[in-house]
Length: 105
Image (cartoon, rainbow, N blue to C red; front, side):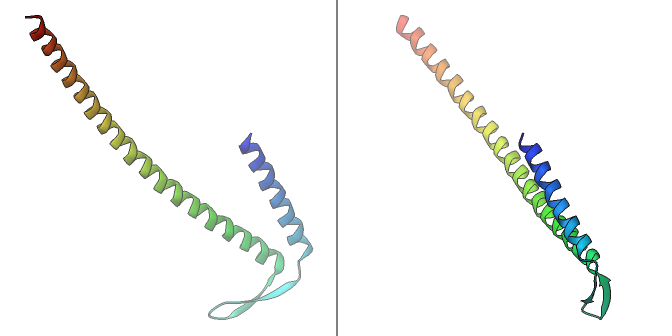
């Protein structure tokens, strides 16, 4: 359900940007570090939205990569701790069993 709402909001945002871009077709001067040129405003708007999406997507992928590494590390630590705990439990059971046998004798 969450994916559906995300998809609907994304489509609504894309529609709003498209309508806004189509309305603004006047040429504008774009200044670069090394010069300037005339571009239709529609291309400037769509280019800005595209670059914003790429930047947000890159940050999201980076965060996901970091979190996956952390999860992998924590799972490894959890497995080693569970193994240590099971070894201690086995050792305690053997000790208790040996004490019971000695008590019987």
